[in-house]
Length: 295
Image (tube, rainbow, N blue to C red; front, side, top):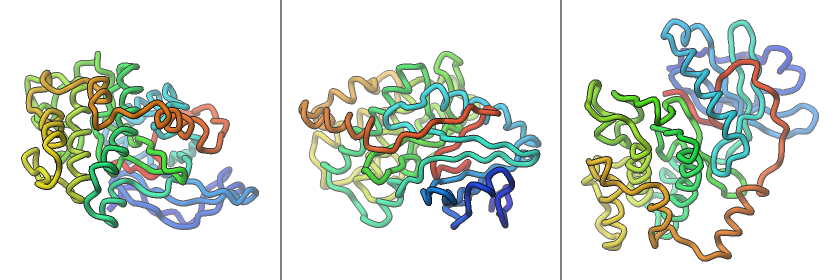
């Protein structure tokens, strides 16, 4: 059940430009719709958030942080891009490119992935994380449902509800337990959240890809994979944050390294494989992922 109620119709100025086609997803604080431009017939994802439930829970500053981080990473490969923000007295409307599905959807429909496919998706996710870490951002909620795939087969990281800056030295609980490291599963633990939080979550995501389902802890490893893959999973999900590799070290692992031709094609798809839009200035600082939900 969502604290944002379903809409019968869009308010102006959105009503003049877009029509609602269907509900894509419902989260605790938001509802995502597929909408269509009345003039170009292009489809988009529109995330709708009611302000009052967030105001009561003191979550509006959290939304402000998200928008600021998303704005700073506009155009970053493998990170979802916010196209437009519209605010009324009661709601915030966030428009994104319409992505085909999430990798959680892929796992549900196709089951366990081959190592080759799993590493192909992990590489794209790691490239997005590399860009975030380079600017000091820790996502803190990486998981298959937050990897969206567009029509070109390009992965985009979404849903920055838990994201923070590493130099803010956050502690405590955050993220999604099935993909979260030990340092984020305790309310008052001694560990500061660093970029190594995302490394663990990338490992748990790889675990999900290979199992074809939500993992049941770091020991729930697929039995059929190569010894090198098992070793990589254990390294990524080491309980000691300092023992986990950096994102650069992960991308240098043989399973994720690619020859120069594949790298050029990957970069080409990232930069030119989707339509270009001019982003409207943010009237308020908020963010949402194309299809991602506040959970």
